[in-house]
Image (cartoon, rainbow, N blue to C red; front, side, top):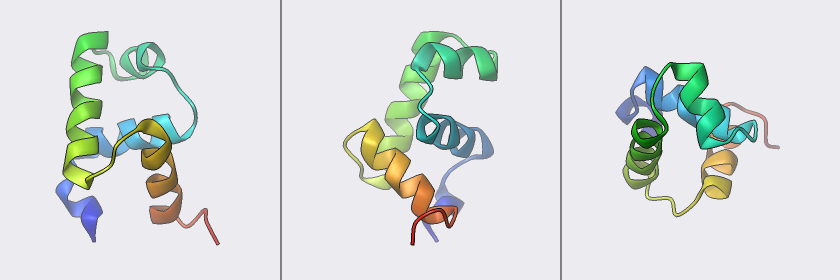
Length: 68
């Protein structure tokens, strides 16, 4: 399963992206700067081979069983 390659914080970022949160909202939720959050999001996308937030949201939904 691909989720093993993501850290707990990276999974949290994926979850928040799937809920439609902005980078600023994610940064606030994690207590990080916006630049750090942007870099972490980019890392998540690279690890999963995804191109954008929409693909990440769909991936997270599938992983969490929210897609039939």
